[in-house]
Length: 400
Image 1 (tube, rainbow, N blue to C red):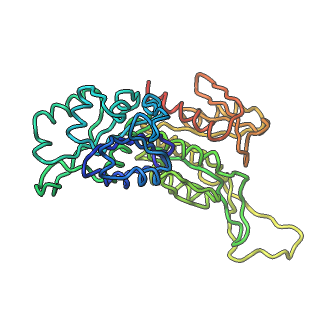
Image 2 (image 1 turned 90 degrees about the horizontal axis):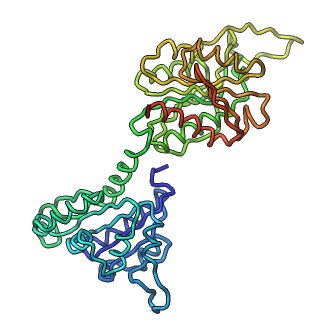
Image 3 (image 1 turned 30 degrees about the vertical axis):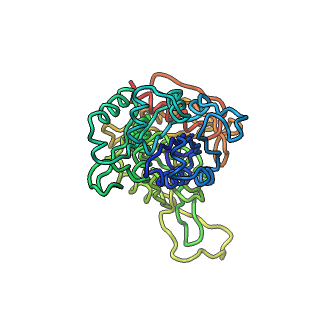
């Protein structure tokens, strides 16, 4: 999932030869999950048709203050308020000058002046025009308004000259905006390790010891953390769940030992670790090489403890922010506080099987976040909402 997913994008198209590239820009925004509306200068229609852009964006393209019949007013203020951000591409020297000086002689410029959202612009012009002091002054003025310029490319220009001035390629424009949006997210540049799901401990090639964990909580945490800008490593036990966000690296394991090895392979390089997996506490001491037959009425299986992954992380902790989970049925707070201290955690998330709607396989959860010196209680929420509550605590930690 791209950071652009769900964003409302207002694309402003001015009259330059690079306007033909706006069809590709619209397509890339739509592919990333954004909603796109297009506003054009009247002259821009000579370079790319409104029909092309309306077909790709699935929205009417606006190029004048009224519709073609002159009966309906196109409200430029509403357009500016609708958008999460505005992109002007191509931004010709003429339009840059008008933007810098507050001119409003077409609907694109009026919309730009009304916009309350961030504005990006991608200059497109010939080499000498781009280098002219007046153009440089326009760009400097726009940047002083906190508008962000997408750097021009260098190469062959429409005039036949070669050099700076060509508009950045559509994929470069999208990448620039994505990177800029990511840089504003609260967990940008944070690396987070999350465990999820159950582990299965083999009895024989057919049977295993496991638990009822669905992995939903860990996967919700991974998706939410990635959406907040983090780079996420998700070590997951057996589950049918999938990840959607491109910033989540999914590593699938089966046993507690496999999870232990994968977690420790990454732990030293992460900022945050969240142990949401329901790891098996015991495993068979001996694993049968063949399926055990029902030859006797009873069977005894000798168990041994698995490695305590969370305890080992607490012992190896340096600067990591370490979070654990506790699922309890009795003496809940007391047991969770004991685990918090014993395993050297920064906080622990307490679930109770006594709470209706909480626990394994549910789509909801009810938690208490326990610190050494305080307890925060939360109501019953979806696991996606619970993930946000937990990650808000991580954000508060880094803001302090």
